[in-house]
Length: 467
Image 1 (cartoon, rainbow, N blue to C red):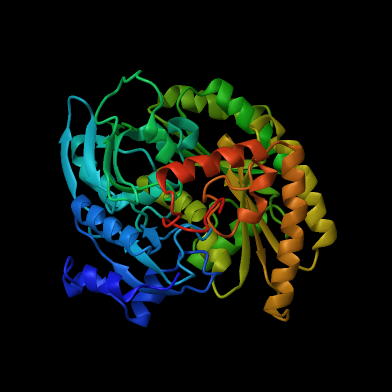
Image 2 (cartoon, helix red, strand yellow):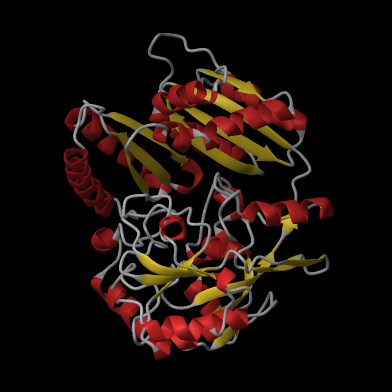
């Protein structure tokens, strides 16, 4: 849908020129996300500062039948915030207020454009936090986190974003402002529309404000880095840790290839020495919060005595903690550096994780032995990331063809294990073709009915997920 000149004229009487950008540099930046696969093609970027301005923009867009793409920090990897068909991008970055903390209710009202890390920093002096945490927290925005029901590194302890949103303010395409649930902890009055919007990727309404649920910052944390022979041992360690540690907050895994490329790229001396030239099979970063030190030491002794790990070290200082987490959070950046990479983000039930990994790992080794393949993820919630690097000598089109063929086999295997084709980054444009591996035809029909109720003209984030 091409931008209507009448729409631009109407917008120019609503927003100052500083809140409307049409230059190619801005479009290349704001109409794209971190997937960087699709070619951005938008006619304008709008920067509302209030929910009222969002409402007015959407009313005008509906009158002119103008398609709109909501945009946050654009840290997604599925094309959910990418504009490719001359849409207008609605950036929420200026709607970034962070209100006062209500210490009695442990809640905080923020704008959708508030940066995740800024929310953390705002809460920290009060001994509180919003426990939604991931590597992109310095760029991601609260609205985007909510729209994708973001997970991250501490889902094991705190769950996904959905658990930490008390209320939402949103605007449907006709310009109507909706407030769902307010600040209520309990509200047993039928369907909770808040949860329809959380994870809907902006196809139903534009989230403009949120009341966040907070919790106490951990008083202490212990972080361990373990080396293990193989993935089977990782699963055994996880089962043992989960049964014997009450306050397990993170259980992250990376294979030897991830560990090597990340420590090398970031210039970090490996905290664990490799026993052979081939290194260890895999690594686990384990974090415990608010745990008695003596109890943790006893558990650590048992881990070594029972041969759950090949080697391991406990962080002795905050600097060690930062280094261990830097290795984990630097994996994607390190693999992507100066390389074309195909990325997958999938999940299976935890009890099926070991068998699933065995299946896909052996297939990748057998069928794609000429590629560098990296496995890492959040073992505590069944989420694995698979990154494939393009060989320098291979043509990009050939690599893309290979990646699509590989994905089809991966998704077929996922379906056998009742897994999800997207654990964290949503469906967007890039995984629409695969959603049927994880959702039934009836579920997709229900999606379409919801879409038609909230956005009957199909103007909001068109083409994403189901259209």
